[in-house]
Image (cartoon, rainbow, N blue to C red; front, side, top):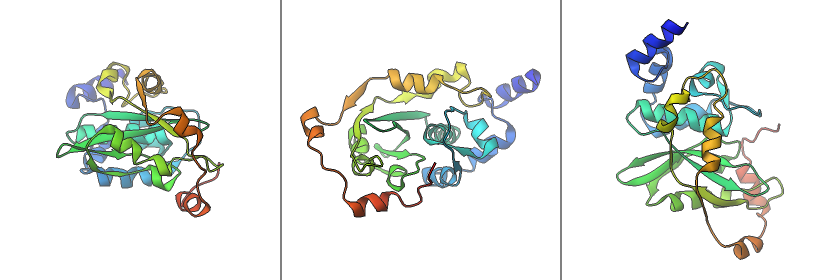
Length: 211
């Protein structure tokens, strides 16, 4: 009901239901947040669900996992920050960012084992992005990561109710796409990249669920 939503907005400033707010506040560390989104069913769908919708459905994909992680970080005192990783012949990957002792870490949901959590040990966003390089490949074994974005602060989209909307929050991926991206290495380097070896390929596919 509109009145109920207004009361929730006034009470916690985020629009979350009391139950969902308690759920997110219980995820007090980045590691706990990662475990929670790991347990969500991975869905293959062209959707952009808000964190509140993901909490209700208990499933989501890369973007939706990152949004939920950003919301959990926010209610526990961090800024809701995202970074987009851009691939070629592959999907982009979205990482929720956090910072501890001046160093960056990341939280992410993925069907690939190596594209998820990063401890806060990276001095720059480029260092953090490069940590995903060897794990970022397509089903042909091609290393596909090429660029990373500037930080996107989701507080910019509070007016779009990105945390609670029932409709898809396409404003988030649109903003990520529009944000400036930085190449990780020159094109001539990319053209010479070898394919992943079989052992590394199979290790990264641990837990992968076929669509």
